[in-house]
Amino acid sequence: MKRTFCFLAFVALTSLAQADPLRINGSTTVNLAAAEGAEILRAEKGMDIRVDTQGGSSGGISMLGDGLVEIGMASKPISEDDRAKYPKTTFNPIHIGEDAVAIIVSKDVWYGGVKALTKEQIQGLYEGNVKSWKEVGGPDERVVFFNKEPGRGTWEVFAHWAYGDPKKAPQVSLPEVGGYEETRNKVGATRGAISQLSSSWADEKKVFALGIKTESGDVLQPTPDSIATHKYPMSLPLFLITNGEPQGEAKTFVDFMLSPPGQELVKKHGSLALDQLKTGTP
Image (cartoon, rainbow, N blue to C red; front, side, top):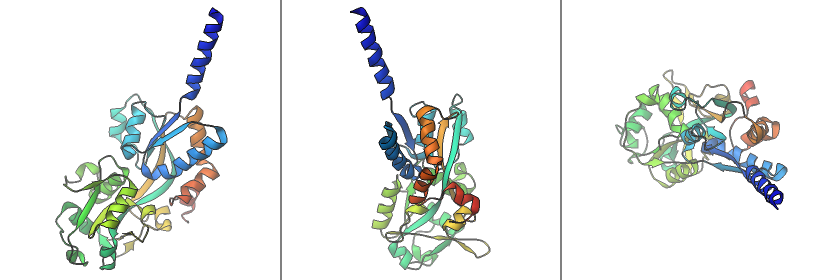
């Protein structure tokens, strides 16, 4: 009887260990391809994978640092602050693709004549010094700037471009948006709206991606070619992050996302795959 009980207890413990899911959390940009990759691996290998976007890129990084997930998703590089906060975590960012941050506007602003802006004009809009679109050649409408909430990789890439360092970005009091769908919906439904968004989500129907005017007078667009060659100034790298080299099911997932089928998912969801970055062509 005792042996039977021990055997059943062993089986129960083994089943519980096997039932532990592969936990993935972070960037909504990376999530699009990762979530579909998880569906494929569930069907093909029976893997139990939980994918979430709580807290965006910073949420994924912090949850990995706290040991709450096996893989973090991020659309920004790991910072020295991240490494200092979690000294026991060996952050291992694995590059799976590339996107870009676009400055998007609502339909009325776009058709009102605003198609491209300088960095200084965007800073003025962000800081509230430009209050009407008429001041930058657009319609006589008030500016509504939806800012990405803290911790989003999209905001950090924007702030790095606009101010040289996210820590140097001024404190602003603006309505905040979280994920990409929320951002696109709010900008698309609000007259005079502007925000930061992954270029792959600028659908040219509800929201439109502005060009960036350089000091030389050139206008840089977030096109596949300019993103691949890094001519466009706000690159958005896509990372899967593990604690050290990936092991077990985490390695299975990472290997799949780096494989041709996984890279096709990156392309499918509007980002550039690694081979496109090497060649500089879409």
